[in-house]
Structure formats: structure tokens, C-alpha cells
Length: 407
Image (cartoon, rainbow, N blue to C red):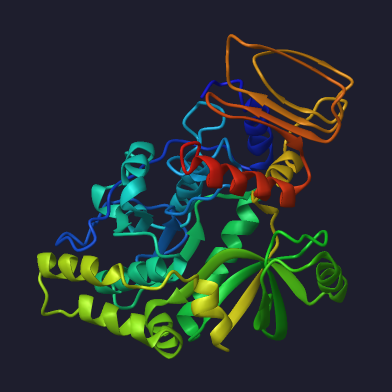
């Protein structure tokens, strides 16, 4: 991908970040390797050796298709061609909070090589590989049992790899406060962001009583509501955007999961039985993982227990769920256009997103308003920018006619 294709997008994302990104690292967590205990002498972080971070990097979607593909989802994209992907930025951010050796990247076999290529400075034992993609509940359960096997007293943070965090210091303070909270309390702690608009593309968390300063018990979770409900949520002052950031003590989480997904817990108890050696454990994992249901952590656990609390995140955050959301955070010309092209002439265009990755192509566009144009090597998309429903239809129709050829 050329450096100009998404230069405007990258420039905006860099402006939103409060700290510059420096070098980073990667690896491979061999699911049942003997070498669990990695003691690299890295200090200067906020949290101690009982605290671990799991970066989720195994998912893929079509919301930013045709730029984001099944084999190269958005967390692996290098927007400005300088090595700074969303995955790298996330791991770099975690390095300033957690001991380096306590950071684990959870992915699947298909993306393992991509993770290792993007994070070459992590020990190869720090990438945990799912046998197959089964949703966030099985992958997070695997990471929890893996960390418990390393440190039975561990506290852990789970964070998606593709979030944009604009305020580093408030973010770090929430994580530090949250990790201390879950060490003292038998609960799952999530982070909620105060909504600035009635957004229908994010999930919402309704808070209940305050447990301590800035931390509340959770009353309800609502996944991507209709606009009318989103307006009610925002006006009530009781609802926060669900950031997807989670914290807990490994023992508390296992106890909660036992009550909500007992069959899955029973299988992980079998896998991590201390009588199994490395090879037996790996073989058992591969044999049972395929049978797990595809289920999210929200539906499998969070919505089925009353032991969930929420910390208020006082930082700017974005989950880039669509082209329209990405447009909102991009630098624009005086007419509101995002221009990511090498050679172009644009006339009478307003509030549009125009992208082309072909260095030798001249692009001439006239009289477009609120449009999305994305020209890649094998796909050209021209459509209304802010109609997510139609965009989903385009994707479904292409899939029906051509299969996965263009995904």
C-alpha cells in the first residue's frame, strides 16, 4: 500500500494520539509450551509483576472493505507506510503500563505470522494462538487459563488491538485504578466512555450504584441500539459507550465463568489439568476447541452475571466501526473532503472520502457530495459515504455472487 493512499487518515490518527509512537515488538505464544515464565528485566512501567495484559488481535471484519480484508484486517494495516499499525500502537501503549514480559497478544493461526512480523521485539512465547476463531469468549477464556497457569494470583487487562486512544495519561490512570480495584474485588470491571452523541454503532452500559470514586456497578448492557433509544440513553446520563476494555483477577473470572458458561470451563479445566504435559495439553486443546460455540464475552458472561462494574474512562476514544466513523476523525480539505490519492483533480466535491492506491493513476472527480470512493488493486467502490445499511448490502451481494474472491 502506497504512502499517500491513506496519508490523510494516518495524519489525523497521529494528531489524535497524545503521545508519539516509538519502536515495538511481537512474538508467538505457543499455547502449551514449557517456557511459561519469561523474566525480561524491563522496568519503568506503572504496574507490578502480578499484572498482565492481553491484546486481542484475532478478529476480522468487513466494515472497512475493500481496504480491510479477511487476510489483512484493520488492526494490521499500516496507514502511513511507516510501520505504525493499530496493533503496534496498542502494544506500545501497554508497554508503558505493564512489564514487557507480561504482555500477551491473542490471535489465531491465520494471523500468527502477521503478528510476529509486526511485533518482532516480543519474545516468541508471547503470542497465544487460537486453533480456530470462535469469538471472544473462548479466546479470552484461553488467555485467562494460560495466565493463571503462569501466575495463579494474576490480575489481567483485556484490550482490543484496533482502538484509537486520544488521551494517553487519563487512559493509563483508568487502567492503573482498575487493576487495583479488581485485585480487591471479585468482579469483572469494564471501562465506559461518556457518550457525546446518540451513536448507534457502539454498545452501551447502564450504571447503577457507585462502588467508589468513578467506579459503578452495572445494571444493563445494550448492544448497538436504535437511534431513538440511543437518544434516550444519552439524555438519561446513566449510559456510557462500551469501550471493550475489561479487567479482572484470574480467580474471580474463573469463578464467574463457572456460573455462566460451565461447559466451556469444564473443558478448560481438562486442558489445564496439571497431569498433562505440554504435548498432551496442546493436543487436547486442538481437539476440544473446534466444538466450542462461537460466542462473545458480552453474551457468554457479561450479560449473565451481576458481578460486573464499570470505571468511567475520561479520555477520547474511538472504535473505527465504519467508513463514516473513520471519516469523522480524518483531516479534510476546506470543502470537507478526505483526499487520499497520488494524482488528482477534484471539482465541486463536498464532504466526501476519496481514496486511490495507484501511484500512476490520475483521478478526476467532479460533483460528488457525501460520497465514498475507494480504488484498490482489485476493487473499486463508489457509494454514499454515510449509508451503512446499503454498504452492508453491497458486501453481502458481492459475497453471494463472487464468494470470498474479493475479501
